[in-house]
Amino acid sequence: MKKSKEIEPLSQYTESSDIAVVPENRLAGTVGALLFSLAGGVVYFLLYQVGYIAAISGLIGVICAFKGYEVFAKKLSKFGCIISVVMALLVIILAWYCCLAKDVYSAYQSWFADGEIDFTLTFAESLRNAYRFLSEPEISKSYVTDLIIGIFLCALGAVRPIINIVKGNKNKAAEDKNEPAFQAEKYNAPEEKSNAYMPQSMRAASSEKPQDKNGDM
Image (cartoon, rainbow, N blue to C red; front, side, top):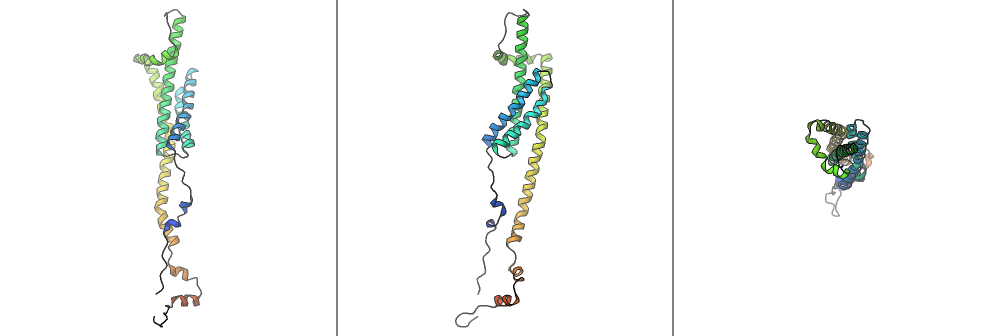
């Protein structure tokens, strides 16, 4: 009998195997998210000093953090989204606290110049003691409100990238689900289908059984 041709594994014909998968460098991405989110922190501090609504920089910070992670890690994943949001929040909180410390420093400088107090604080000392002024309700109300708005805008800026990641994962899952059936149909087509394009004489010859040397079937 004629030995049937073995079907080769589909993995040899998988088109996706020819596409290089870019690895995600999470450590580098984390560094990139931190560095890029610092732009939002700087904008927050500068806008606050000139009297503008600094909280809008929360939106800028998270967008920069996403971009920084993607540039350094070579791709953006769910992990990258979480890290980017966390880094943006940390930088915004740090910038907010620096603004509070700057106000404390300026207040002590003004009080000392007016002769109301006989000592002043350096900026480093203001950083170490600024949180104490938040115990005063009149002072903490405006500062905490600015921080909440900044965090809200930071979260708002993260919505769109997260939605894109979720949609991308769903599309990839759907493609992976449909790929095996497509490959099976493409590479495991029945032999009879290919014989239909052969000349009639060749089809007749291929259908005959080979005989051995003794003439047996």
